[in-house]
Image (cartoon, rainbow, N blue to C red):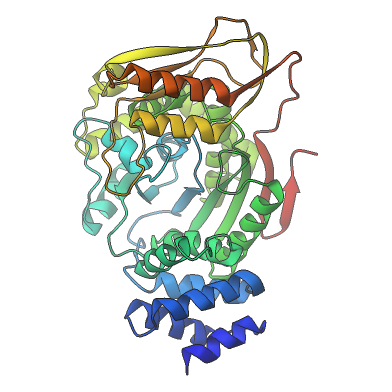
Length: 445
């Protein structure tokens, strides 16, 4: 088998066998296939695409390139949840304890962030003392005892994906549905879950900017799940404005705590219940979506959800006092209001611009090795549809910088992210569609 022949086969639109795909991935991982040949193959995939079977075989080859978690020792159906990312997306901090409180075990490995704000692991590390490292034995034991563990991804999880993604990033081959789908799903499969719920963001603050592209990606990932025996459901959700009000690590932990108490932003709570309800159905805890929603609302109302978060923090060495006193979380030296310069209704918020502003404050990483400041970020005071008057505070910057010029530039960026019109805009749906093995169910029509 020669690499050049496989490149030519894909370039000409041929369908590769599982053995040919495994040959490519194994050879690339062990250094026998050079970057320039793998780049040529990835570009051929960008132009020619892959079948559902090919994409599933690619996913499995990448999952098998490193460590694979065996979660069979954990009692019950293990349901994983993954988000394609967005601004203010702290859903894992809420959904994981909420679902565990309702009776479905959550054994989740998450990553750090690169870009707007920290990832789930960065947000957890904003809690003083929280330990995101666990051995496999400790991880399994904790889930069996508490129904929940949130840990950092293993360094040897899907090394093929890490290597291939780094190559795609510099060869203009990132925007390929089969390559994106296999990248995401290889990590989920290697993590050992029995079933998977995907939150595929769409809109200005998302990786996928169009609804059509987001649905296509969701369909590809659901097809992979079905091909490899993991029941998978995807929700297409709105990221045309930040989720909730808080953007920044400790600020998002605080908002998550409020949401688990039932006092969080309406959009954040609605989405977390929707994601969690699908997890309960896949986990065989509820017969249907409506019953699952009731169980989750009951867990919030009874205090079981916030109690489960406290239990998680305690099990992983964190300071449980933050649950009752969020003032113990890292804070900022100053709060700078961003003032509206016109009146009307908020018609649009550029989520990506808000995310970049939060990163400039120190809430995210511009480079892989950059340090995060857990206490900084942005809290929105006005969302889409809200009326505003000239002089109203539309957002607060939580900052450490003494550089007033820099802070003013960030404030101007946040102001520019708001579009104000005379009439209130029509509300966009929070969830556009649900994608399952049976097809796409649109909720926005």
